[in-house]
Picture (tube, rainbow, N blue to C red):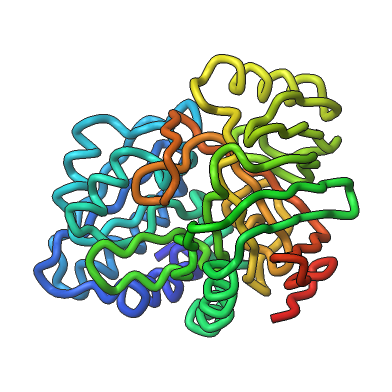
Length: 326
């Protein structure tokens, strides 16, 4: 057995046996794409088979954008599965295929790192059961709040209404019951702000979905819940984001505000791990519909990082420059 496979086997075992509570006879589907390290499906398949699951791996072509649906035959397989782990290079979490699988009773993680290195180190090695109580406390705070303000040292200053919205992303990858869906690594709480209410400025740092590492921060102007202008940043990245916002219907919608809780998450060029870093925040544009709790359907969902955050809920600080106060 190669050394990389050995190094990720303990994480794969913990995920399959404990966090997902896979059982003998269950249909267990692993979805990857051609960029995924082969050790990931190998390790997951070995663990699922050891438990007696009826396991299968489906390899798809990489999606053009995060949030784009997988092929229809993959979507059908997801809907027929009882347990799913998706570790593709573009997230399948905010897709119609995920929503239909969840409605059919599937459980699992629909976005996970696609490199073996990220499974063996950093955020994936944290104990997600230890993070879960922190996530539950933050979930309870947010679901009772009305107005959230998020600021950062880099210049983010965004206000949005949370009234009537409940956090969805808080399970920290513990998905043991039908219909429970999360993402890997565990360690965030997120929810969709009320459409049309976000106002202010977002300064994206470090990394953004589909753009990669951000060397020069991108500044997004937000009015009436939508991005109206993109300034700064590396010219190629800024223009790519403008093109997506211009050509993809509803892509400018402020779709998500998430808060990272994983103490082992690293700042990398991959959004999947970085957005879980303790004391950071991420804001997404695009889709927030279906099982996520919003009303805007879109073919993309792009997360952008915000570091050194201060977060106020109804005027009371709950995070101060990255330090949790709850």
